[in-house]
Length: 80
Image (cartoon, rainbow, N blue to C red; front, side):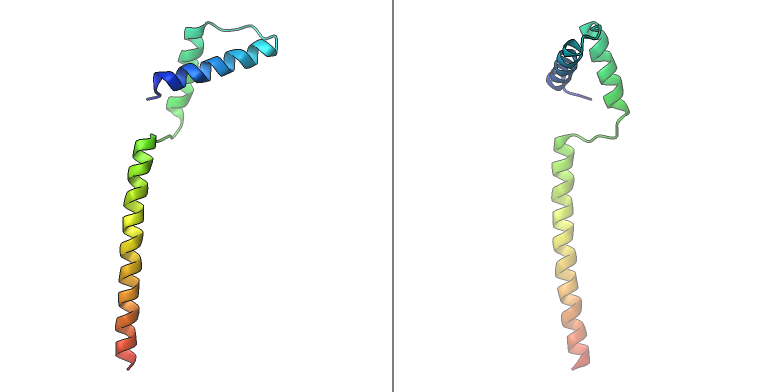
């Protein structure tokens, strides 16, 4: 769900842009509803989820690199 302060910022920017184009302005609530509907259809993740997944990825990458080094070491032993 979009945080209310982000929703307010987006609607303000849209209202400003439409006003500068001499377009009829929708009501604030109608615009908020439209923006919220569009955003919910997008495949977005929250910043918190992104940060958490990034940490998981970094740990996994580190483990893969460690295992790769270990495999290379064991392969070298087998060759000798």
